[in-house]
Structures are given as structure tokens and as C-alpha cells.
Length: 347
Image (cartoon, rainbow, N blue to C red; front, side, top):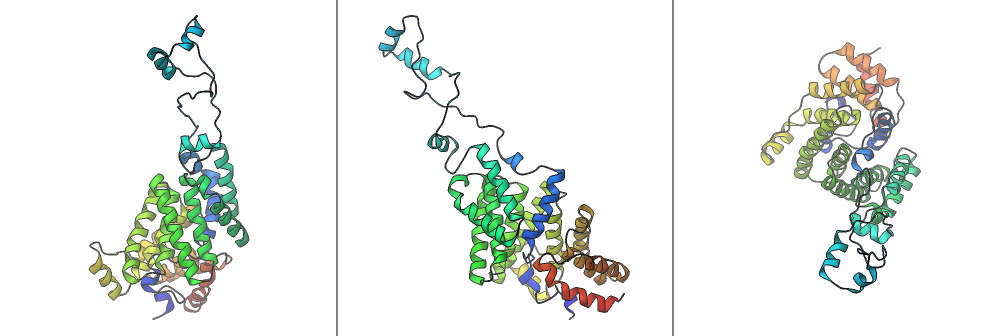
């Protein structure tokens, strides 16, 4: 079988059921830069607008109060009425909290809003940078997990950083460890807030972890991957990255072997089902939302059209793919596919 008939390169079947996550971090960085120009999502929706605390007065914290003209007498009298009055009083002064008080009020791992926003912006900037920046961003998040680990916006960024590290490392055992820890961070984020970013990075890390699991777990992760990508799209219908993930999932499922489909059907009630046409529609949606989003995406479009017998469209998208540089590992991996497409489709 031609490499184009499967998945291209050495990647085949259930091994790529979820879509290899190589290059996803970089794609997301490109997407985020453009997304922020049109919509503000994530931090502004997930963080509270203000920090409003209701606290019971503590001795020595707000001074002594007097409720009658005969203040000295009232103060000396330890009556039930005075205790009730003190409990009901609301101070007009701003309560100043030290760091310990704040952690008690917000819960372990929390921090003031004004401290969270700049920190998360710094993490985003490092994620969008070089490999060295990504490593620095990962370390920055790890170092501050105790302080900020109560925020879902921190946790999905930590999951994203684990995904970055999974891509950057070459050691198989390290890849698995990063993917596993990242998935756990994404799960923790979802427990606190089911935002689009939480679902997206959970899906990506499912894919990365599945590369190190057996066939049954891979198939199970395939269902989970699809579920969370669908939820991402429901929350952010104009998110090109989510449509790209869905398109790749559909393409790979459409190329599962008969044995792999039978295995999935035996293990789970709902069969894995997707067609090349499904994949094509998702990849075309990516181009509609953000033209040139991914070289790999254009290669997929060309391959889909070719398999559907539409060679003229396949040739057009092949040429469009050649116009884009290789920005990710996946782009580079598809270079051989492009060369084969050129040989088959011609000029």
C-alpha cells in the first residue's frame, strides 16, 4: 500500500488513533497569538472579577468598638448582647490580610488576582517562544505550583507545559512521564473549570500518552480524545486548533484496519467511525477560520481530495502546502508525503 493510503511516513493505524501530538504546542502558540486579537478567553472568564471576603472580626485586628454612650461600662460588661452585637457588626475599614490569611480565605494554593494575571501572561509568552523558552516556562510553572495550583487557568497551562516537554524530549520514558503528569494536571483543571483550554489540552495529552500504551488503552483514549475535542469545539467553535485535531482524528480512524475496528467494537459498545469526507470538512474549516494555519493541514486536504478521486483539488492544495515553511515536527514528517503527491499528481 502506498504511504499516502495510510497515514504517511512510518505512522500507521491505532498507533496514531488520536493523532501524534508532535508540533501541537507550536501550532497552539500560533493560534493563540491570532485568537487573542479577536477574542478574550480563558483568564478573563475563569478568574473572579474581585476578591470579596467575609471575615469575622478577630481580637486586636480591627480595634475595640463601643455601642453605647457609656462605653467603658459596656466594654467591661461581658454580656451576651455585646457578643451578638460584635458578631453582627460590619467594619467600614478595608481588612488587610497577610499571605497566610489570604491562603486561608481562598483555599490552599490560591493567590491574589493581581498576582495571577501577570504570571499567567508570562507563562503564555514563554510557551510561544523557542525551545529554551518552553523549558523555562515549564520550570517557572513547576516552581509556582504550590502558590498558584488552586487556579484552573494555572493548571491547564501546566498541562500545556508538560505537553511541550513531551515533544521536546527524545527519551521514551521521559515522554511517557511528561504525558502522564500533564494529563493529571489537565484532569485537575477540568475538575475546577470545564473551559475550552482544559478540554483541548486534556485531549492532546491523551494522544501523547496513548503512544506509550497498549491497544486497549489506546482505543479507550481515542474515545476520550474525541469527546474532549468535541467539547472544545462546542465552547470555541472558531478555534482552528480544535478543528485540526478533529480532522486528524477522523482521518486516522477512517484508515484503521479491519482488525483494529473489530478490536474496538469488541471492547466498546460504540464503534469508532469516521470517513475521509469527515476529515476533509474539518481541515477545510481550519483553512476557513485561519488560512495557512498549518502546512500539515494542507497536506491532509490534498491527501483527502486524492483519496476521494478529486485530483485537480488535490493538486491545488498540494501546491498551497508547498508554499508554507516547515514549522513543526509534523510539517517535516509530511515532506515525504508531499514529494510522493508531486510524483503522483504532477504539476
